[in-house]
Length: 71
Image (cartoon, rainbow, N blue to C red; front, top):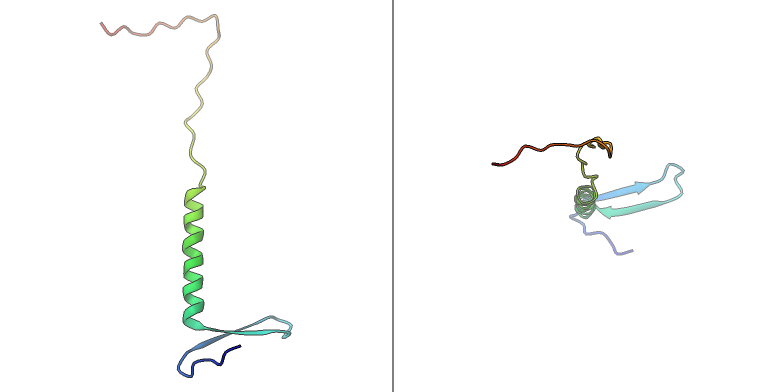
């Protein structure tokens, strides 16, 4: 792992068991997190269920419907 930049802020990520520790640049982590959130919003918008029009009742086959004439 490269040595951290002395002027940078680091974020230490650890698990609850204390078995591992990962340090990342704080600005890079926030940029990654923001990009991931933006991509997720785009995905939700792309695949959002589209509303369907209300179902119209089917008319019985033997019923005659008279539509108003245009003239």
